[in-house]
Image 1: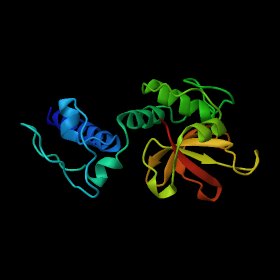
Image 2: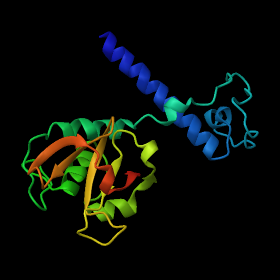
Image 3: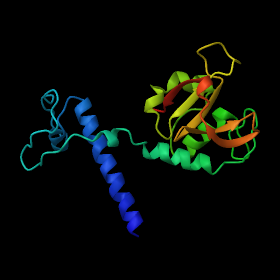
Image 4: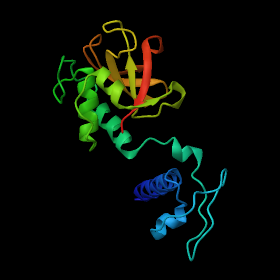
Amino acid sequence: MSDVLSAIARVSQIVQGLREVRAVASGNDFASVLEGAAAEPPAAGAASVEPTSAVATIAAPSASTLTQPSDQAERAVRLARTMLGRPYVWGAEGPGGFDCSGLVYWAYHAAGSDLPRLTADGYLRTTTPVARQDLRPGDLVFFNYGRLAAGHADHVGIYVGDGKVIEASSSSDAVVIRPVDWEHFLGGGRPR
């Protein structure tokens, strides 16, 4: 029971941090967002906002809050892991078999995303670019193994952390977890 309460508290903290980020990004201080009124943009470098009425001062979100994977990304990773060992089948989107982009589609769709079914290159073109050092679990990782022109992705997997990816691999004929192939790494992408 304490694990459930801890998880609920963590989710609450993440949601709170996201609200703060959204408020600051939109040019409103968080206190005014809570009150439903627009306010002047926060001063540059401000770590907190001034309280208005009975709303307390709220500190800016920590860097760790900003780098946490989303709940949906975490669910997609967990769901993809349940498919380990399923066969690679070109064009398949599960659950009996998968190709690389089919696994991405299935995992995110099952996690509640409206991410469309695309090719690896289609996902590369429609996700928010993420630098290698900024990858977090649930981000998509793209590769070029020479089947398409340079700069185009011919393979995609889901980053699981610690330099590893879960992917439906034609070379392994199955869904596997393996180290990211940095030699053929094209870039990362965060589903919107």
